[in-house]
Image 1: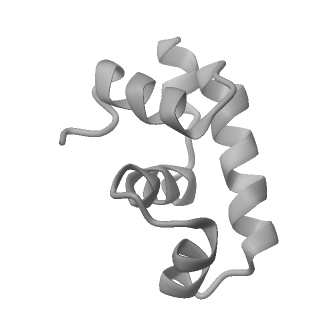
Image 2 (image 1 turned 45 degrees about the vertical axis):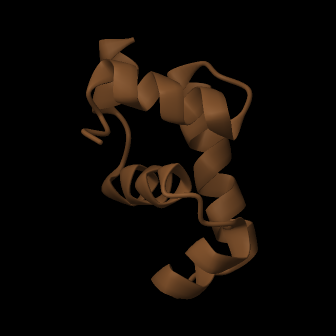
Amino acid sequence: MPDSIDRLSQREAEILLLCSKGLRYAEIASVLSLSIHTVNTHLKNVYRKLMVNSRAEAVYEARRSGILDE
């Protein structure tokens, strides 16, 4: 798992942080001036790298692994 964590891009980590704060895809897209499709693609990459299948699992794994310090 640590190798996967190291491979999260800055943008992926940023989107994951916003997810952990409860923002929806459209809200994240607006905050970061991205399209919803781009946000979705980044999150799919996060899920793959963290080996999870949902937003809640991704946030849990990120907190457990120290990616998110909240």
